[in-house]
Length: 322
Ligand SMILES: [Cu+2]
Image (spheres, rainbow, N blue to C red):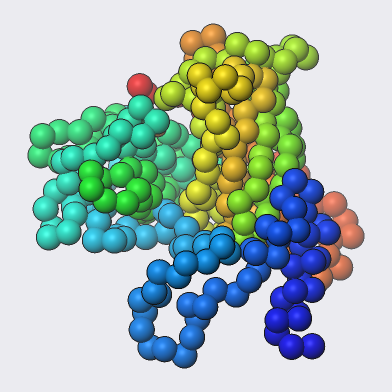
């Protein structure tokens, strides 16, 4: 079987397994090899006019510097559980501090800080000083490693998510990722997840919010939307590209119970999804673990006994500084 035929068969397989709403055309397009990978030494892929979806770039959040923009943490030692004046800057091409940003989802910059084991999640909005230094009061609850993600679009530049590690001194006891599941609870709310993450492709995720068994249909706007979804890959905290389906005021986007997103999982693996939503004047975060793809055969053979589960360590944080 030649390569094209193999790819074709693969495409067909994908269409059968995942094809539902996407259709065969899409599925085949997704595996059409991009002509970029040639023997040429040039790192510059020519812009290619093609109907095939572009290959997924390196996910965000894994680099402290990208496209000439560099994230510079400025905070010194951080103690667990103590409020910190968390500060950082972004420099642009030429090394100058970036002071002009475009507003996206109501803010010039979104800062996500998660513990490395994904047990703690915070989504906050720092203040920008005239000198280009961002600052926000932040409490990192426990010792260990954290990743900060700065999600922003410099004026005149591309949207970026830069990532940097943040360390908190002390004894560190990492927790396992909570087991995969389609239901998360937070503050008396239940959120159900529908849809699958598909490696290498954008796919639809629908989240439905209910309280006391009743669908919530009066979600409040938070940062211009009824929900915000952050998705991170467990093994390296790659920050997935997520965009909402529709927007409030377009005549079809409802204030719940359903909130729909399109998300791109760059590979198989375990992911943690964090949904921020606002109801009754409070922002809450529901979190899910999602496994994408199948576990290696070796692992499957050795897991005849149930994995020890820490019962719902879904310690969600509603603390959002706005
Ligand atoms: Cu934000």
